[in-house]
Figure 1 (cartoon, rainbow, N blue to C red):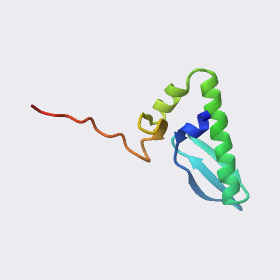
Figure 2: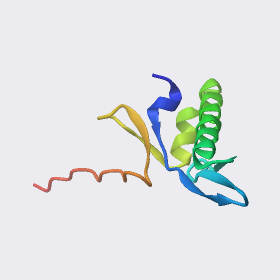
Figure 3: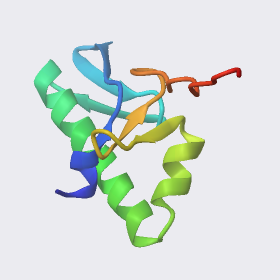
Figure 4: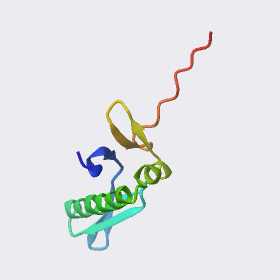
Length: 94
């Protein structure tokens, strides 16, 4: 499993002039394409490149935490807090 396969993030899409844009708001990355699929593919590649660069610098965890991600131990992936909020701690009052 590569770095990009372990991270779940938002993708927002819209028209941009005569083309399309796809945005990952958590990482502040925007990509463009002639079609919606082209914009999504370009965004996936830019996000993958960014994450691989962070990983190579040893700063992946820090970058993801700052962007609002958390590590989901159950699934073994990083996930955006915007997509699936962190569960609160289970507190038992005795």
